[in-house]
Length: 194
Image (cartoon, rainbow, N blue to C red; front, side):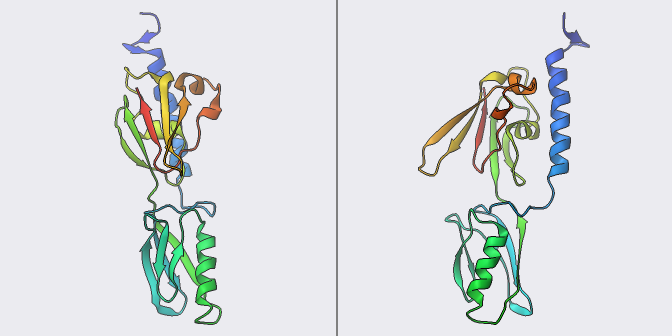
């Protein structure tokens, strides 16, 4: 029983340690949404105009990437930062009032990735706002003993509607080799663990 200690293979003990490190790092990194965060359909925003009680509203970015706000109508939001959306609302409100002061706050994130296959807890996970492949696997409870860690793929839809396949070889990344495979995930990515 070479490599076993108390009936647990050495590679599983190493995997458990790695996952604990990844989870603790991602928990510290998962703070408020940063200025670089780009809005996604489904994100919930609170928009308020200073000294204008009638211009305070909670909105959700629609599937087509827009939001609706009183006086100005539809505003394109998906793919833009909070600052860009705030500036656009202020610019358009300036037609109706002098120097509007607008606050835009993200109250709920919609970005999700999916992990399926040989993991402890398959399912959908928030990207909060961005996570990489290892972090997503950690959120899914890690690989099962039957997982083929070097055959993991990430399915990513491109804007044209087709799918791209990204390879992820767990063994290489966990040994510090070819770490560029540990890419940041995008909303809707599906990690398949055979």
